[in-house]
Image 1 (cartoon, one colour):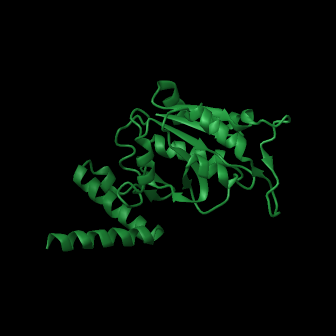
Image 2: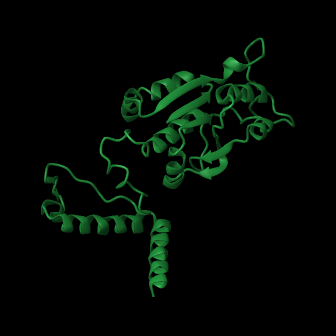
Image 3: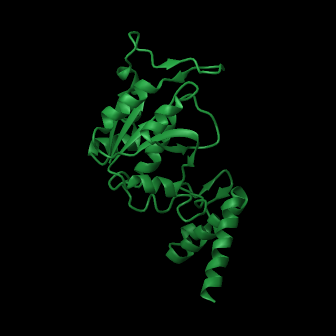
Length: 237
């Protein structure tokens, strides 16, 4: 799949696209990341892309014209979903990441300053996504998180086919604890079950550890897990 990233920080996106797992996925052709500078579509003689907000207030707002023209130029006559990163959007989770991984192409629209002129969002019919309840200096940061999360579900990105299946949240629980050599470090030993060589013992320990971690650190997910088990039990009666 190909991510078309429209932002004011093309060099930031290019650097991300050449780093680590994502960089290897780009090199192999599993994904593509095309970075586009919104500023290059400005019709202002000084290449400005922002202006003061009507009604007053701090900060600047991205103007509608360069945003609309840049998305239209990338989209052309194709029906490509345009994702805009916004605190009012759907929260990015594993289910939403899987959903977006099915598209062959996505446009990622990155805001900056105090946001984007609302008319641009209406005209472009964007899909709004939030990566969490906090504020970033720009949507280019959110775009990198989005690409990384979505790409994990694209064939050929992860070397081990089980890697994404066994991560946190995939089964509604926090992932189990991980250990490596040495067997003992500063008085702390690796759990015996992991050294047993028994697949069943290891699987049981990992599930118990996962449940305990979820109960301790994410009681909201733990409650959902219990509710799901209860519903399943009721349906089977």
